[in-house]
Image (cartoon, rainbow, N blue to C red; front, side, top):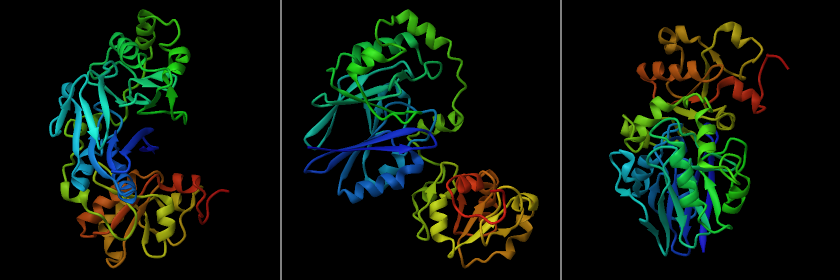
Length: 357
């Protein structure tokens, strides 16, 4: 029996997959996300699993991997393509390698095209496969950077994925429309980019004319992922604050989501670092918030108590992230940034004072 969970990271639209052998509980995780490490580790612990591998389908450009953090937390090994150029992994995989977890295993298939080092992992009974950014639900990954090549991708899909059984379920690394799974038969018939009678030349021509902008986090994500996601500040990344459920970003900032802040509102100081006209403007402000504009914070930090945690707030989360750095420099320790700022707070329906209805 297989324990299987599909997890999602909304900011990067990344799917992470957890699979474990039953009843032994030996597990692997595929494409973990840095900011979701505590979520993933909590699930692994709750299910009583023993994680032996953190696997990557490729060197991601849109998020930082959580592989290094999970290795520190669980002792698992990190594995990815031999051709990836990554340092710090425990195992480098090639075509037809087998990754064993308990009595189950994943077969490695090299499926370059999105990048030069993409892998697809196929479950031992060929009932499911994890296709990374090679094949999406009714789509494919892009082919215009990191050694990508549409001709290579076309052959990867047709030779390594479409040769699997029709009923084999395919799980991609991303989806931007809320789709979760597909099958070999579906994609062979209905994929608009390379299914049906679509030839290699047609596919290559289509891909070369997409004109997509590079991922926003590419300049941060790729260098980080070439080190398995190991951050500059190892200690801060692995510490667990006890005053709230927080996420640690690769930028080195602890973040709290609106629901978490609502739960802790009475126990923390809410510091709004916007300008006064914004504080009283259309977005309103959180009840009980202290207003100290960012430009004044370094001089006025002494107005804040050192006995209670501080959550910083701004419009969208950027200025308040800067505020956490200022406060840490001033000697404050228990600090978190409200992820998404007032825009997210209001969008998720939390109460405000003032503002437009």
